[in-house]
Image (cartoon, rainbow over all chains, first blue to last red; front, side):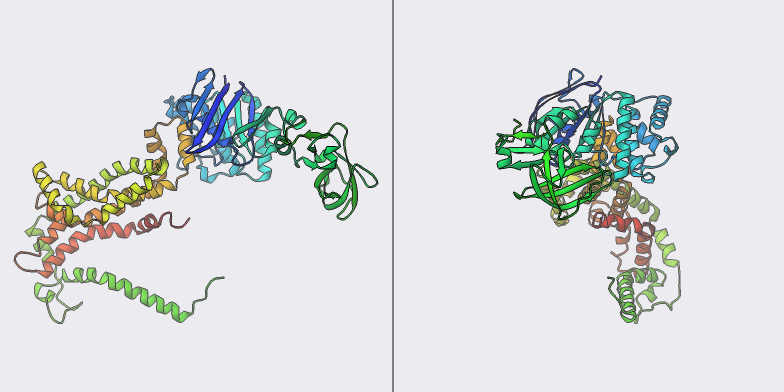
Length: 332
Length: 276
């Protein structure tokens, strides 16, 4: 079991309201990602679930039990921190066994569980090393190992990959996803990286200033963003927004077109402009285009496109791929 | 770019540094030398530096005249005891100040430190009367508690500085892992702060060892540490410089040796947190 329910959870730090009242349902076995720009309250929300911060008001229910006032350890949750938070004076074995030792588990059972977790995470050869002798990725695995051995009802991850380099981040992303498949345990994962959110989540929770802007599967958010903020946050590169005549023509205050939804032509199209920067990645080509009305847009084409700085280009949004927003930024 | 220092000024600075160091060390050196002189040589004018009749007579006499070992043991018990007692109180105090700071924590720290600026003589009479009515005069327990109290602000400050360097996420991880507050302090915080605790311990042992005001006023014989032992050679039968020096040398030798072997640890402890 690993269901978590938040009911009108509020958090103030002094006079500052960080979480103004959040309702959220996390189902057993789900991989839920909290995503949003820095300062949006996503880490605070995770820490409230973990019990590392006290809620100002509201209820946190874990597996049907009100855990609002329960100490972190009683919530049966395990957390993996951004900085790994390993105990530097203990070997990997002792780090992983620490929660079991605290629970008063017999030594043989501790060792059995440590070996099991080490096997899953390829750490068997490193059990006698100290965290200082490990690489970033290995440290992160030890932190995950320490979480696994407790057999928690849910895992909480607080930006666990942001200290790793780009290549390792991709590997660990896949490893964590595989781990989720293997363990089938609820995971709540905080990140500011929307690529991580899109690739790992069953359900994404987009947060802004402590408010939940939208909850849905990655493709739901991609296809049907509720507002301009979600539309701009999900998808990489970001959605282009056009205002003025182009939007008015479609009965909207602003329209949004994703970079990958522009058809390019050198002869004709809905919008015309000049290429500022052309990024040739081989697999894709990103064109930064200054439209004639002064708007700056990014267009993406698959494969290699022979367009360069200063070229004239015409862009046409694909049929049915234009998002319309009203004055308040809500999707029409 | 590294600054260029000419050879001449390098030599100049080296000689100056040695000169200053010798100047600071000279009284100790002179005390040690005097302890090996006869009383006549000790007061000779002009003073004799190295060329005198070396003798260990003073040491033998000091040993036979007063129980050095008892004073030494008192010094050890009082300085180590007061430091350990101080740590016992200061570790939880510094923990709460470092990891659960309240709005007035900084003020509290400053207030604690300000008590060190108060002249001790100001509270001597009330302390003496309290000690007398509680029957603590000339007891190891009494003087240990007093030395613990006067050094407590320093112990708390030093530990606070060390604890602040420990990422709070690690303690949160321990909390998530089911560690009680006691286990968090015993299994995680304290082992991580061992270098800091060690240098705090060393510094406070030295401070307590050298403390003379309270030990001289609140102890006479049974609980008297080495400071009282030295003082007993300065009166009332007139000054015997050679014996006084022998007593002083014997009193400072243990702590000098301890300080010599732990100087790296001490310097690290005192400058901790100054440079990341």
